[in-house]
Amino acid sequence: MRPSVRDRTDEPVAGAHRATCSEQAYRLLAALHTLGKHHACISAKKVGPAMNWDRIKGNWHQVSGKVQAQWGKLTDSDLQVVAGHRDQLAGKIQERYGIAKDAAEAQLDEWQRKATDAWFDKPKTPR
Image (cartoon, rainbow, N blue to C red; front, top):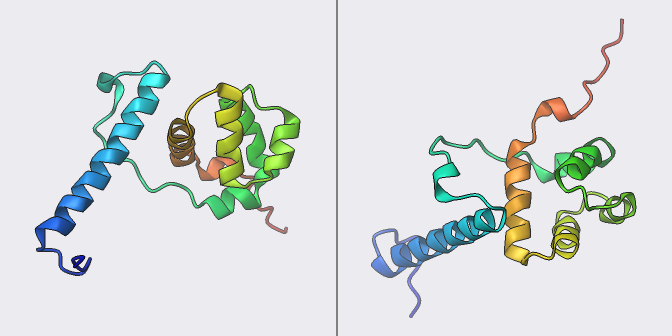
């Protein structure tokens, strides 16, 4: 019988959670090594929450320049096809750079964490 997720004291659930976290950490480290970065480059400071992807998608015309600056091999046509869809963007990164899906997702996660309000035009206030 599978243990309930609610039962936080149950060791199999805690063990499964640790395995999932370890797997995610391993994928991130593998992606960093693919990019030529090493463990020493990983900062210990806490990273804030990633920007909501819906906001990125809703402002895709403004953000697409940031995407192309990060992944220069993506063409204007690629960005038009993606049209703000995260899964399609990850697929295009994977295709253009010849990397694994996990590595493309890790790069996209890191880029999304760097997204700030400054990337978007400020609404004009009426005078």
